Amino acid sequence: MGLVVVLGIGAGAYLLKPVIGPARDLSLVGDVERGNYLIRLGGCVACHTDGQSGRAFLSGGMGLVTQFGTFVPPNITSDPTAGIGRWTLAQFSDAMSNGVGPQGHLYPAFPYENYTLMSDQEIADLYAALMATEPVSAPAAASQIPFPFSFRPIMAGWKNLFFKPARFVPEAGKSEPYNRGKYLAFGPAHCVACHSPRNVLGAVEWDKAFTGSPGGTGGKAPAITRDALLEDGYDAATLAQTLMDGFTPGFDVLGGSMGEVIADGTSQWTDADRAAIAEYLLDE
Image 1 (cartoon, rainbow, N blue to C red):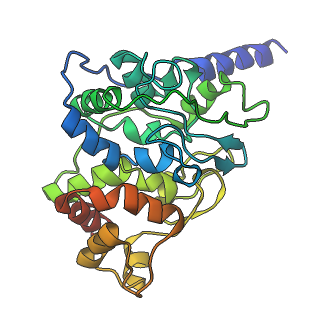
Image 2: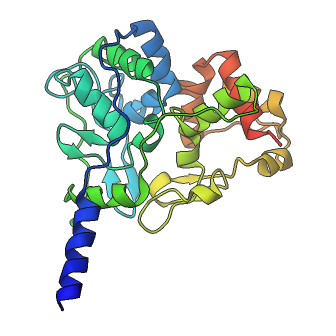
């Protein structure tokens, strides 16, 4: 019995310990123009703007329905009450890098697992851009998360099991466009978060990255592995083109969530970034 108690205490201590990545340089001055590009690069608009309900830019998105509840992307405008206008750069950095907001642990429906890979300067730039947005005083709808998932401290255990905050490290021996594409796919563009299966606790199955999601936490999304893309008729040029205009090699038009991602995000990327992510995904 004593051994069981000791093991229980040890397991509890492990699961409740803070999960913190490398310290960031918060003395950097953010650039609003670069930050505005990051808003598009990181998919912020598609998630945090519910155009179907006529909500204003970044003032709250449509709910993401999962087996753990419905998560509603919040208002991230500069409004001090309904938005994040009172957040400091340190608080914003903690949310993006470690999944901890002023309200406590954040749920991985917010892809901090991907944003943690961003550079210190990018965090400062994105913060500057969000603080420069038009404030919207209407709060987003409340998320509907049943107990026990509504008890945020349990997310400490989830993080200790599945979250490893770090910064992106380029892959040795690969080209700059390849590494840029890999960074985008795993980092701010978070393609891997939507296009990969997740386990019963909602964690990405990293060994099956890009093999598609049948639904659940990340929603339903097709495989975007090299083999799957080639089978669908893509090469690097056509994939980059699809990310700009939504037209597939089979003369279809991507709609639904991916249509929003293209309209609000990838269509407004640079040609170089679209080409980079295509090169990475189709690399042999």
